[in-house]
Image (cartoon, rainbow, N blue to C red):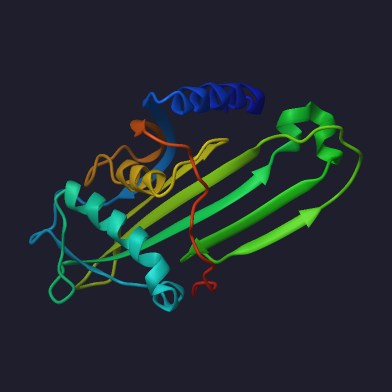
Amino acid sequence: MASIRWKLSLTVLGCAALLGGCASVREVQSDVQSFSTLAALPSPPTYRLELLPSQQANAPQFASIEALAQQSLAKVGLQRDDSQGSLTVQIGAQARYTRDFASYYGPYGAYGPRWNWGLGFGRGAGWGMGFGGFMFDTPPLLHYRAVSVVMREQRTQRIVYETSAVHEDVWTNDPAIFGVLFDAALSGFPNPPQGTRQVRTPLAVSGPAQPAAVQPAAPARP
């Protein structure tokens, strides 16, 4: 991963361009892991979306994530049909940020203060904070965004597709990032490269980036 200082420089330049009234295009790099036993699109190519208890409890906040996932599923040929879907689909999303002192200061950063805050749907939520050492400046926030999709064959409940996508950067632009991540996670469906790969997606930016508005969710069932 590129150094935090390098990413910060790019972010400053990008913000300057945006403040100057010029739209820009950023490349979003996603780390994707996919595993599939599907040979082709299911017949019919339909799915039932199964919401976890934490997602149902936060339905108004989760609606935007659900809509983005549904759009990405439609792009790969799957249509939602909660009454007669041939697949059962579960989705998840995470948003958190941290200050990566180790990358910013080098090996001595391991003794510096650490901040970590996170919210998620379907994977639980948590936060933590600790202090140690003495620092003269503060590294930028590193934003972490992740999504996951699990598909089961409706008739047998056998898992036939599992995929996830992760993006980390000092810059973020939600909810657009979550849409990009769902697209990246489903790239190659139904026969993606097995295992880990990187997917790069251009994203048009027309305004200042903002942190995600994902709300807290209760821990999901195992």
